[in-house]
Amino acid sequence: MNTLAFWVQFCSALTTFSALAVLLLLFIRSRKPAAVHGVFMEAVFFLLCISALAGTLEQSGMHIHPVLYIVCNCILCVFFTPVLAECVFDITGYRGLPVVSVFPRIYGIICLIVYMVFFLSGRMPSGALILNILALWIPSAAAVVWSLFHYKKFSSGTWQKGKKIALLLASGNIAFFIAGLYIKFFSVSMPYVFILSFSVLVLFEVFVSCASVQYPCTGDAVNISEWTSLYGLSERESEVLCKVLAGRSNRETADDLYISVKTVETHMSSIFRKTGTKNRFELFTKLSR
Image (cartoon, rainbow, N blue to C red):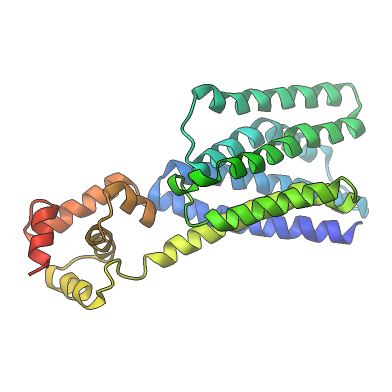
């Protein structure tokens, strides 16, 4: 068994599982489409890591049922590219031609057809390499290149705070890919390094976003505390009020707090009711007295 490859795959699986759990909680809390895409992406990544770990363990003498590989490979062929594309579009804020969103799904079906042809013909050793190149390497490389070319659009995307670390991770992946052309270990580990990088970006972004809501947006902690006590605002309403006083729109507030715009509107209605105001102008006027 290749010990180094095992630990790369194990670390990827562990990080991916952590990111999956965090995004699942985020989705339950916010119901945002970006969180849904992230959940599916991390689920596919985790499945890939488990499949790779099973293959590595089988090399050491452990018996793994072949059905596991068949199921995992079929799922990866169909879902890897489309889900990865949705996540990359979320990150870069891309809202372009519908055909661009449809192409990854068609590509996933093509990968499944290629896999089934090799599987049914009994040529899986060579088919496995082609499957890795078609279903994993090419989509991963395309995702990295797309992210670099659309780097400036990160500010309008879902994960704005991870802009610099995303650039760093993408550059690292390209360097890893180039090294893989000459060194076997790098070529074998390339997909898992990409998975590890993506999961680190998710954890970093969620952590920074959650940590950022711990402090009042206006910088006046005393007034926020007084208003919360005076008007009986909940903790979440106080957070929304902070964002409003900082001049954030409902959409921006929703993105900052990882909740839906509808939830922000509900909190704003509650704040208006508790403070006896009808709109933001009256709210600002009353709180500035």
